Image (cartoon, rainbow, N blue to C red; front, side, top):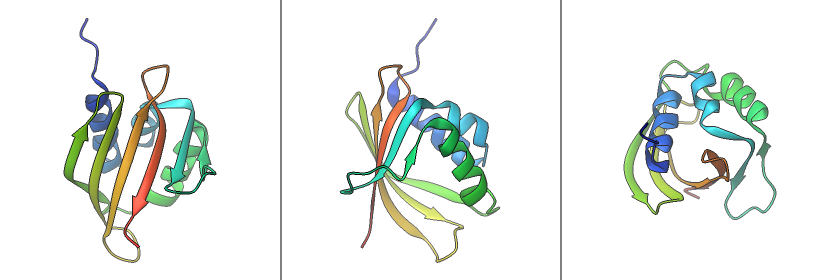
Length: 116
């Protein structure tokens, strides 16, 4: 059986994000995932259930939502994506997402760096 590389898992969650598929999106994350805005120390989301609920309620309700991958850096257990997100109120957003692999092989932590 072929195992999925971490970068392929990150791509799978991006594809699920663009399909607005909350279940598949959340399945790419560890049960105890932490989501943080860099450089904040405190997570704004903790746990897969909270992540699934937030994205289902706050993001996936927007039919034109789409994250365009501008550039990806694959560092093995860390993947950095530069994304241009459209379809949210307030217009397009530029963001860098830093995904870190958890001990279970899923996404264990993600930091978001937004244009200021």
